[in-house]
Length: 408
Image 1 (cartoon, rainbow, N blue to C red):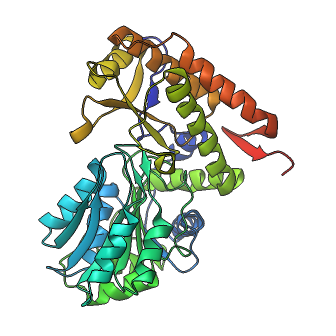
Image 2 (cartoon, rainbow, N blue to C red; image 1 turned 90 degrees about the vertical axis):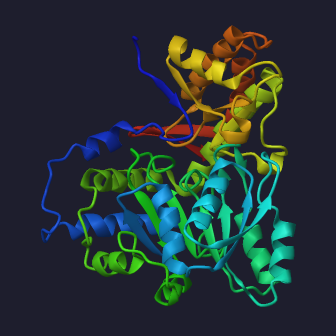
Image 3 (tube, rainbow, N blue to C red; image 1 turned 135 degrees about the vertical axis):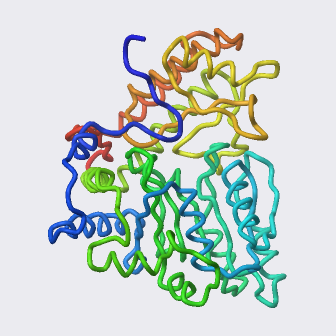
């Protein structure tokens, strides 16, 4: 098929040209005297993205799922109790992993389309007088339903209950795209992956661990080897790894971190909100459809999960988009399979790129029998973005678009 595939799943995301070029390197000796320069550059840059001065970033040749396991196995002992909520496929999978690893999980089930239930977390923590709960799991951005939760609120619940449990956060589809503040929010272990807001290929799992988290590792009794924080911290302190690191991904990470710093993290977050708001305008004002996220407070700035009308299969829309228009959209997973499709809007994106995704999704929906007005979503997004641009200015630098508040 002529033309390039339009990739608008919520990960992997588009890899900027300059990041791709940075990874086109000859293989080298990862034990050489020069190699620590690359390691330290990556770790220093990651601390800025996590917004931490005291946390320790660790890079694993893995995915975010591997880092879920690293968080659990390094900081907890077999049989420890965990508090978690299930409101989408990825929060479910982390709970499933914790159960399979032998931890006792107190699960709070929520409607898919809602986020972390802060009041129910507070009730559970206050009821735990003996502090049997050792960790709280919190999925910052539930990719399956397009829902973002209030991590600062989880910290407030822990503090209000005067509870010492560790706070684990899945920020796989939020870090580098939605504001995350490790130190301010008292996060003990944050998990992410390379293939979303960090604008890299999949294959690099990243955790950031607080001082308290590293202290708990010394007491935790769960078996670990490949994912042992201690081995990584010891080797990384000298600039090396206990095993072969993914060199091209590290070169790419150094470049993507430079791009985020050049744009400015706060500008990155504003850009994602700006783009996401245009997609929501297309869905709600143009197509007159609903998002899976049940209220504006849950709306994600990295992925929109769009409910299709009764009698329409979301998988059909996705198949038509791919086969006829060379557009990749995200599928509905588990409970919401067939009920929706997803547009990812994170990473290296601008308005015109997203208009292509909206137009393609619109055509695929029309072909699948969805009763919408042709051009309605595109027009609504254009109207929103053009109106927003009255108070914003765009400046182009290298391969990314930086949207900066007027007068900044």
